[in-house]
Amino acid sequence: MSFAVGHRHCSHARWRNARLRARALGAPGFTLIELLIVIAVIGIIAAIAVPAYTQFIEQSRRADGMDALQNAAQRLERCYSQYGAYDSQNCGVAADVGSDGFDSPEAYYTISASALDATSFTLQAAPQGPQADDDCGTFTLTNTGIRDADADDCWR
Figure (cartoon, rainbow, N blue to C red):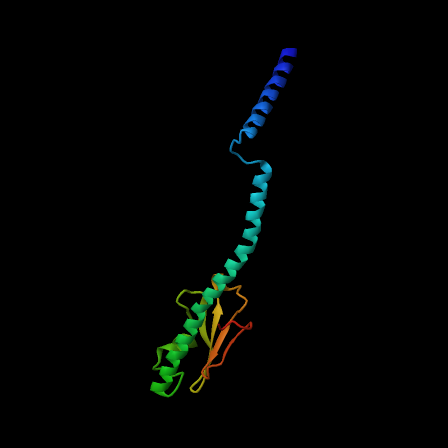
């Protein structure tokens, strides 16, 4: 029994001595503290980078809604030039925006008309899907070129 206790003690002492010699010789390796510091730095960088990246993605998706809105307005202007009315039945876009609306090319917005008659229109692009929580909310565009959004500085 005394041999086992002494053996365990000797084994531990040998392990400790080998570790100290490896450090003295400059053996490669990291301590637990060094690893924890690296993990903490990575966590701080991620906490800053992820929200900035998410905001950038939402801003880039806004272009999808604004482009679709301006495209629909341009098509309505062509309809007015040809038929003398924005809501002419001869115009396909009037039927598209006047009903349930249509999705933007990337489907982040639904384009519809909140007001559409022979002499004026107000189009809106409502966010949907992953863009639904965007701070800018719904974009609007009128036949007179007035652009608006739920938040300031969104039409950039």
